[in-house]
Image (tube, rainbow, N blue to C red; front, side, top):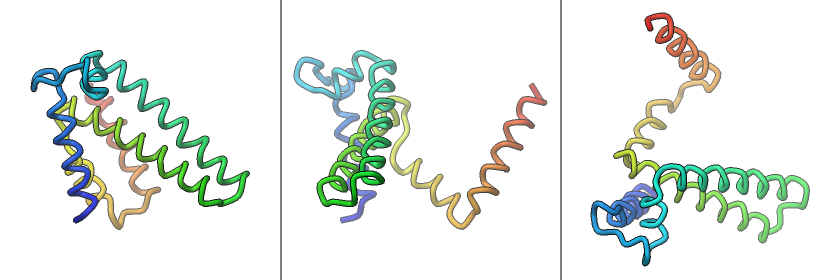
Length: 127
């Protein structure tokens, strides 16, 4: 079973928790976040991103113990989970993200960033 399968199954579970699909905010954390709207789950993404950074810093300064590594993995899992909620809310899937990563594969990060900057500049010049 691949990581893609796991992410896709999780996204399908999240989709099933959407209020439009009968998700009950009284019984489901995901349904509650989706019911509250984007501000709620976007705030959680920000919190989880910060906690991920802090866990990584703990590894930098506290040593690479199994406990600290597990904490970083847990925080990244929380970040991915809440990011999946956003993807589902906006009608996107893990496959969309994987396709973008595959598109970028083999491209220098510096080149990719320069290309995006040029495209952004071009779009604003047309507007």
